[in-house]
Image (cartoon, rainbow, N blue to C red; front, side, top):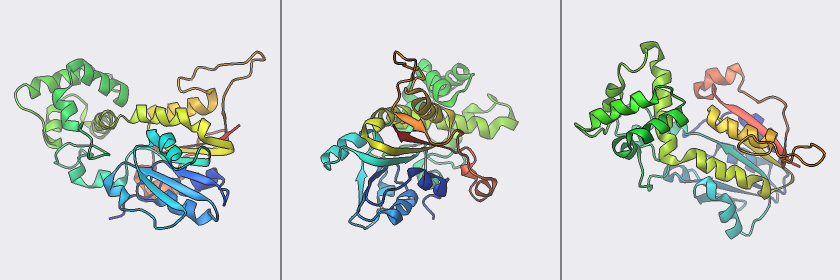
Length: 298
């Protein structure tokens, strides 16, 4: 099985504008697709890659210019410090989940498999999807679905889940999906379930807060003219990246100096967000929602 087909590979590597002698970070190693391309351009430089998934760690690259660190990317600054690195020339992050994680039923990420709901990127984590579904309060569940799935009927969904789990705990995807029947138009089934499962996955892995931690650190890590390259797959991620690059803050609030100039550390390289071409979307349907943003440290 192919672990993961990297999306927007050529565009993202071009966006990094690699210095052969520079120091780079692949924040989401996965199957190593982006890392392998970066390595092709390095001479005296080096690459640090991060991933928290045991299965991804097995894809490591054997090269003295490469080091794979098993950790969540929110801790990149700390781990680089341990390596004696305070500044880097570029960082790439391909957010979301890998094809492998989706396609292996035992990982419990996909709604199309009748598997135990898990969704942990770090399988050593104590919180999994079943814990969220079976132990969260009605208000907390509604908040997860509303904030991370952008689902308007979140309270109704949460109430339905609570009513069913009072009779019996929910373990498998099929049990969970059966509970949700009737809460959405049949024509919207795939979109609805995708958002529900996305919301739970984000909560299980604390993805949005982890991304915020990474983005808050990245400008301080980059050398002048260093590049930030981020591929996102839903609006929650893309909004944070866009705000940081264009507004100078994750919230989108613009802080200005006495002359009315926006205080920010990054400049966008491309005026418009980069999306996959039709050919790539046909070859890899999961690329359809991808958005690539590239910025340079001022």
